[in-house]
Image 1 (spheres, rainbow, N blue to C red):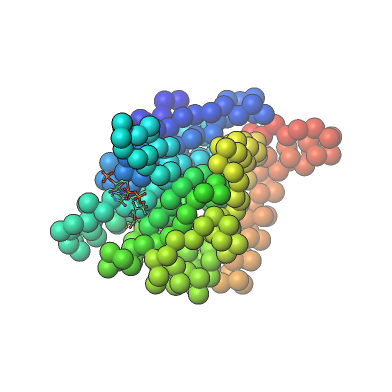
Image 2: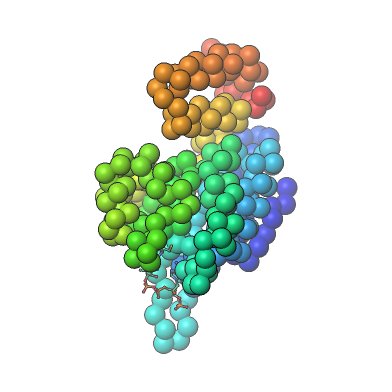
Length: 280
Ligand code: COA
């Protein structure tokens, strides 16, 4: 299993010890630390490739996305701050018109990430702004360090979020908080982000990687088939009304009763054993 590599997006595959079948967690790092991991065309193109790879590789059971740590500063220069990603690369916006942007933002990498069928975790250490926050919001779960900062500063550029941020923020925070973030462009700290439901967990920076890996590895020990159905079914709650959504769940739940993994899981529970999933 060789992941695609690029200078701006590195992918490591980490074996999950609790699984015997070669299951891996993919740790994906946006790698432009000198530009606070801003998402330029190279990053988004590599991210699309990563999503296609992650979807196709059976043994990839969970994906963690993060930003590269700052490099040692050059002599006499200040260190750059930590960042998950400080947004779309603003240099690519200058002079760009609607037509060019429509092409660039249609069928984009962030939407591809949102639509991947596997579990995803954003591991945020530092600035998650604009498109960076939208990458984090396209992941299923967000874990952040205490020094992280979140915001949608597009308003200061005469813009609004363009990678689905307006929609996904409303579903995560509710309409009022999402509007406040988008209207003001102000950053909020990690604790406030957790308080309003933007991030799931906040931990010290030194603990962040372990915490994200522990969660990814725990998820990776589950049946990948059941995880996929879980994601699809919870996702339907965002697009369907309650009545329709409950019917979708009932159907998905009943369908799982014909899966091999349901029989494996139930038998393992009754025999007080660990289930050995077929992922079917
Ligand atoms: N696009 C392109 N370059 C970016 C960037 C972005 N979104 N965010 C940061 N950078 C670059 C800076 O231009 C700078 O490059 P340089 O050192 O070659 O001049 C480098 O990253 C470091 O950023 P800097 O602004 O010097 O760091 P800071 O600590 O003073 O400020 C921020 C940090 C996050 C407050 C500031 O970088 C910022 O406001 N970034 C833009 C955020 C934004 O508007 N994002 C939404 C885009 S749609």
